[in-house]
Length: 305
Image 1 (cartoon, helix red, strand yellow):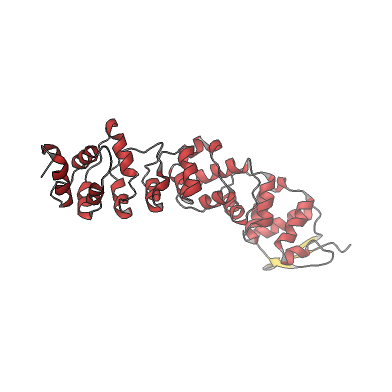
Image 2 (image 1 turned 180 degrees about the horizontal axis):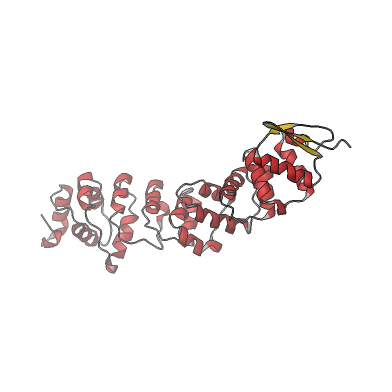
């Protein structure tokens, strides 16, 4: 039968038709049955929606975007009895995102799908609910709505571990990562190795990234960057450091670099343009005595007294 609305005494007969899949699977019929049941999804109607064959037909069309059907769309999205895998398919038919939706009782997969399919507007209320009950979905929520996120950045709670996870996600462009880093580090001292390492990588790749002296120092002393990467970052930010920091930096590099803080050692290093520039700077600052290039190596002489 094409339409339930054509039935004269529809209630019991419509239940029978739906249970036995004798009604055409259209949103018009689903909405009619929902409204017939005092704007609620009955077990019968939900069972109808949980039939994969029905789903295959319903997803061919979108749910009408009429304002008077707002309660239907909301209740449909909040129907946790719809099977997760079918719910995800149905989301593509929902025409508009929701600013406010009490999704706390939905399954994790359903909420994840709401975010991935952009059915939740980005605002502080939705973000806080995701962060408190559905972590780490709140991070994908940011990434997929990055422009809206920056508009209300001051209202959003973002931890350093959140920052690290976002920076490590390839879905976000470097330009957005740079903007996020600059906003976050303007008000926060960053201490975790993961965040420091990711920020350090970005600073090496994009010299336009502006970091505070304290955070640059932390990257050089605490991050997991390779030795040559740390030295390159150091050379890119020479005005940020004093002689006392140079001592700490050499100690943190360890090995032969640490020996440069002592009296007498004359260690050898691989001859590269970067290291040659680095040692020339150390000599200029009175940290080492001499530099000698020997084929593939550089010999550095420290002061004896």
